[in-house]
Length: 253
Image 1 (tube, rainbow, N blue to C red):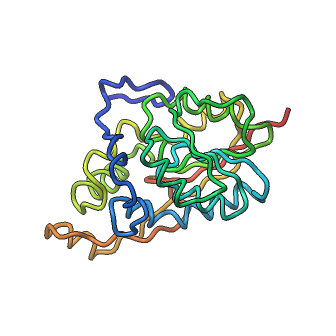
Image 2: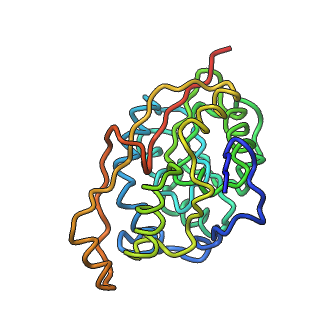
């Protein structure tokens, strides 16, 4: 099946369960709970985001698809005022309690953001782009609400055989580290696809990095034996054949 993420994917072809996180509530913040994999990668990707965005003191940042606020808390801790957008009201309430006074919840969808043009100094999209069928509309909206000279930082998953084996078959079906139905391989995004969409939206690439799990033989053995495997640690590196991080900047007026 040919997939082109520079075009919308018909909803009827998408099998992903985007409703899973609606009901986990405070378990968002349990490092061993349903969001354990997000906790494992959060420190690594947050360091990339903070380095990309620079000094956040006094700046307004959109956390697009904020979930329970794992990234928003780090952005707020760096001095930003964070507007967290999510389709899940339950997740927004968890994020507001976790992040505190620097967090402003906003319900909505990434394909049609409820904000004016150039409203934000920076935009972060963490672990969300590979869940959105209409990626062109989403990238266009993220660019629209970003102020000239502002940065977009994101992490997502590459659409490769290796990503299928590790992120989908390995993490979901073999090791049980992620609930089944969390991902659909057809929504994974090749770097060239997101680069084209970003360039079409007036954004230019600044940097990329791989987001790499440190999977040891013990993880695989436990999975093969049907036992719960430990969540791996994550690091950055040059490889982008599975998950990767990106930083784009909007041209100044």
